[in-house]
Length: 94
Image (cartoon, rainbow, N blue to C red):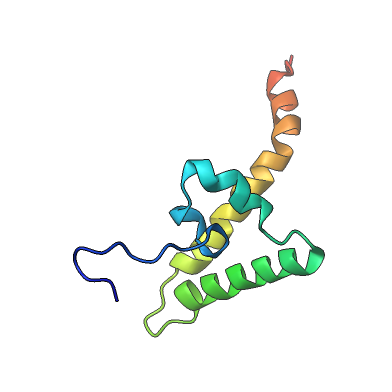
């Protein structure tokens, strides 16, 4: 453990979380990620388990976890259908 006057041991860029990476280290951090199909699947799986354990699998649950999923669904479906909705909005009805 580092005492008051010492600097803590440096952590490699690969082991840092995204929020801990400085802006100058970001390109090298991105290049060190695993972009193979199994790496991407593992990242989605970790994200799912993290979300599930934080919002769904709790003792005193609320509707917030499911509400976030529904809000994301509404947002993404609106983004996908925006081109069609924009076209319909500009059409004149007479």
